[in-house]
Image 1 (tube, rainbow, N blue to C red):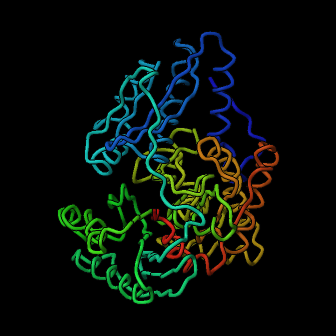
Image 2: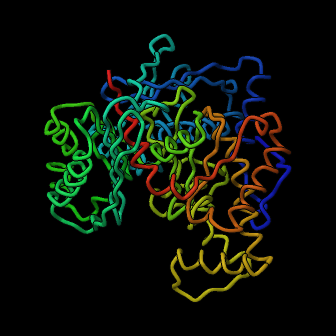
Length: 463
């Protein structure tokens, strides 16, 4: 059995099992074992995109079976929610594939992942298959956006739950920026969304001699400019979502003379805004709010096409703790880096709140206690900071980044400062070489508000 001894423990959760330490301990044992196995994991999408992850497993034996399954299942889960795909192919581990096929099935423990990655995101049945190593080759999607891709007359828009923003740019200079209130959440008519977006685009376009490209940002999962899941559309029936929302942005592109038109998750565009603010690339953005949201800009300064739904990735390898009520899985990011994390730790801190108090209000109570110097509030933020330090190192196993952009309501005030200080201490103690390579960034108010629309304008490539 794999055993680890973390140097740092969350004050309110001393049994926390950091995914990064467990994985490293497993890999150390695998690399030292005779007859260890090299395997390759491929995550495929229907349009032909494939991402590859290479790793090593312990030899096949009854003694190793449980640890190997845990390592493979948790790794596949991470890759699915970081990259997104409807097919998993694995070489040189047939006994693991057989078990994963049962786990990721309509009746298995990962039924939620099976349905979401299959029908919800990609309109096909989710599968896990054996494959030959030589057949598993990476096929990357075309690069989208880029830090400094500001040439031409561009429009950028950002669709939020309470307002929509739009900006007009000429060769990188913002000539117009506007914010308009709207209420899309409970609108049942898809025409409301179309009319609002088109109105913002037309108002901004009036400030340009012509429009060469349009880029957009919105919360949710967007695959090849098609909305798959999005809170903005929660009031729309499933059939209307399929008939009118999914093709919406392709129809808008046609109405704008088929100029380059790209849409990205707002997390990716937030990371792009942060990259532009610091004039660098390799940015991983983490927002601790109602849930955990993320975005990523690679070292080449581009959006990757990954879904980056890190709320669902495993960060704690214990069983039966911090269970996500939506996916039914244990130890995933949303329960460690969001208002839900704070609500989970609140009873352990000794702070009492009124029964039935919502999570946003619970956060306000803790923020007030923190400002008053309450040690109990401090332990909540120290615990989240400890989680975060280990998880930053875990993310670094899958993402190449130099900058960690930190934002969201949980990050505000003195508590956010504590989270960053404790996370840095964990990195310094456990991962000193990694700690030297990562800088923490917090966006200014301008970047947070209008930077989204401006950064979205950089998404399309202009030939």
